[in-house]
Length: 74
Figure 1 (tube, rainbow, N blue to C red):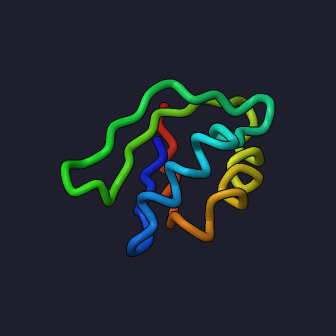
Figure 2: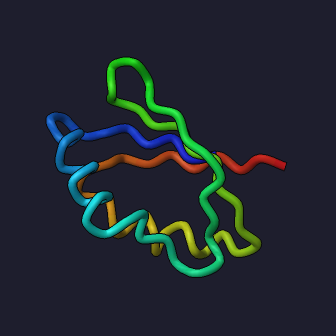
């Protein structure tokens, strides 16, 4: 599970980038589903991969707008 905490005043910029470029996921890191809180400040995402080393590649594409917490789920 990925917990994305949007940086202050970045909500519109996040979705602008998403609409222009997509999720920017490396091959092998798969998006399953997501939910955004009512305040539009946190996004909870379910992701799957067999290679945890793909997360830093993806996070690097968004770290200017989002703080990430990666929570392994078995």
